[in-house]
Amino acid sequence: MKYRNVIISWLLIVIPVATLNSQQHNVEILVVQEAWHTGIVIETRLLPDTLLTELDRYDHFQFLDIGWGDRDFYQTPGFPVWYAFKAIFWPTTAVLRIAPFNLQPGKYYSTQAKLARIQLSENEFIQLCKFIGHSFQTNDQNRIIASKLAGFYIAERKYSTFRTCNTWAARALQSCGLDIRSFMVLFAWQLFRQLDRSDHEITYLRK
Image (cartoon, rainbow, N blue to C red; front, side, top):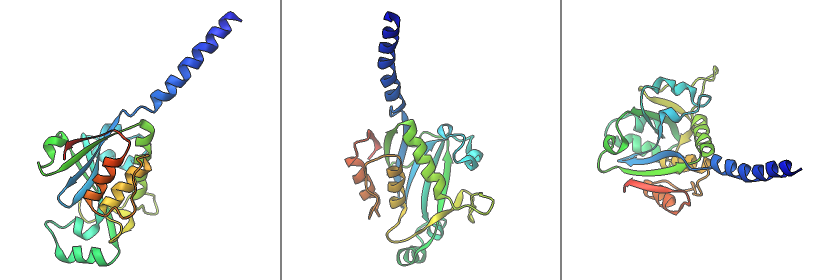
């Protein structure tokens, strides 16, 4: 009886600790805003084996910058006025862009870029990966659909005035538990203002 009580007492101590450890915020992601682009940066090595398996082609890179936007505007250099006008006034096909890189983010992005570091738990990170995976449109063979340029893939939802890259990024962060809103988050400054109000641990590499 004495030993049983000791074992029970030990379990009561250990089990809550294990539960807390599983919720530690030890996975780091970045939110980046550079010029017209807003994206989420994740380390390739952290991708779950069973999620986003078609991104295995990027395994030899350290980071992936994943963004979402209007297909024509996103894939055209500079600032194509007609595509910008069309994206504002009509729902258009959207794409996801995967930009892989190996440099540290502080060196990869320009000095004008804004970089926010967010700490997630492992469970939150998995939910984020699921959201990103569901953002890809797939064909009858359940394969993601490449767009006309390398690194771009057809997205599941349409781009519109009220659903921009910043809306998508906000929804992605919502999916993993950040207490932010995505409704009418259309511009980068609105997204980062939401981040500033979040109770998650967020630090800025560059603001």
